Length: 75
Image 1 (cartoon, rainbow, N blue to C red):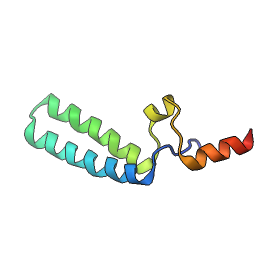
Image 2: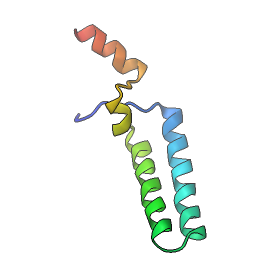
Image 3: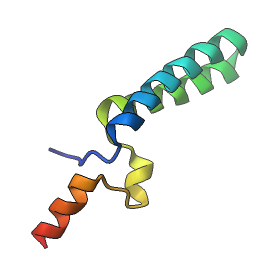
Image 4: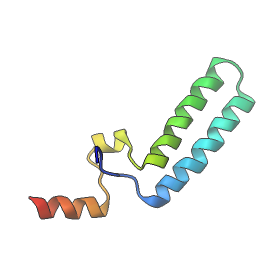
């Protein structure tokens, strides 16, 4: 596996639901480039929810409880 999941299940579900809602609402209420840019950003949040990996969380060192236990056991 190329990455370690760093987003818990409850947050993954929330990211997918909120991301889809923001994408749909941004296209419905904002016209032009602003709506498209916000929709693309929201779809990025949806993808991180579906995959279970958030690059921003990885940058700050966030890990799931299981991953922390495995890391401590290895070294």
